[in-house]
Length: 142
Image 1 (spheres, rainbow, N blue to C red):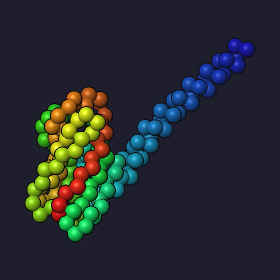
Image 2: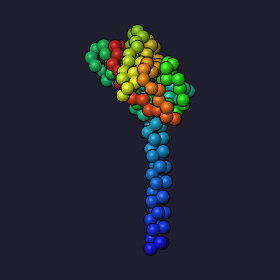
Image 3: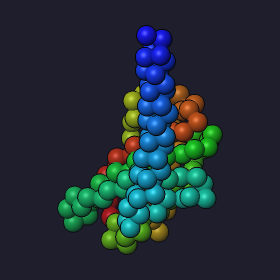
Image 4: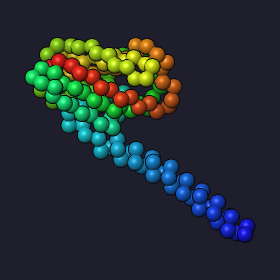
């Protein structure tokens, strides 16, 4: 009986170790296989993307959706360069500042006329986790 219980505990422990390792590998695979053909993250600033999606909303508007990851502790109240729009047809003609709400926090995304994008938290409690994932969804004029 004790041997069966020991074997069961060993199998559960092995399963948990393999599960955590698989999650870390899956995360790494997702980050390394992200499509950066339309948006290039600022990797020097430790920004990574899980996904970048652009949708034309007519002749003069675009919807941008990003899922960003940051592994460093930041001053979220300061503006941070997160990356740039690579496709010239999505770059706005003039600089735009847009805001979006994520749970109880308000963020600002500034896109300049050459496609560089900046993120800043305007209100709410700053993230405290070691790894922060920020989904962004904004509409802007070309």
